[in-house]
Image (cartoon, rainbow, N blue to C red):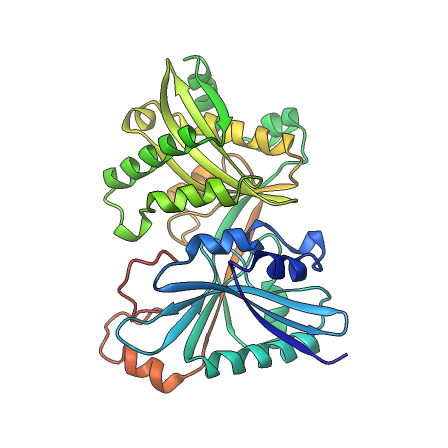
Length: 346
């Protein structure tokens, strides 16, 4: 059988899924769904998937092709969250063959560099470390909750003492956590999330518009839920969780000023874990901290629910060094994509 190469747009759902369905369940997640990638389609960003097939093996790689403003060039990045290439059978020679084909596609389409955000639970960075085609490095640790453990064991042996005390404190205030995915719940989440970002003076790029949240409701209906924490009829914290067959991810969260003052987030996270268990998920990814510091306060908070960490790795490669240098020559900051000044959240 001759090798096949396909470039699939995220709106071509059936074609996308035809290839994704051939990847084993334990090697994929919600981040690989066409409907997830499609959340990030806009005038600057085009969500696509590169598929390379040879005999029975498949290389499957969702990515965002982003226009570099005021140029005729582009770069490539993983859709928001985690992802990176997945292959049906781990085979280094096949992977190199697929990446050579992908490299040709990038060069032919004026894509000068790429950044891969590898999936910390799938650990798909490992085979890339072996073939050494990209610069691979650990960005930070993420907290992984084992949903297969019994609740009593988690409470007694996993949860930190300070975490349990805060959960009990909020429970005494008759707090309720309920789950929904209807439009009313999404509108409330949007309100709390955006108000929370304003209160911490977050960068503009972290604000999603209403179309984004409507797309989650319409396109990920079987792969998300909203958790609201309420005290005396007032919703004080809210979280969107997305999930596939095996893994769940705490996607976005907002807490009101009153909710922060009371410390309601611990109970919300606890109930989200219980919900993930009911959905028979194996693991719930809480993400990492705000920095890569092991003492990061957000990381420490999340580790109150689990002592298990997964490594989040990045992969980077420049395909047109001359153009990349031209874009970054006069810039002080030299981090990857330092030439970008748009509001695309990466």
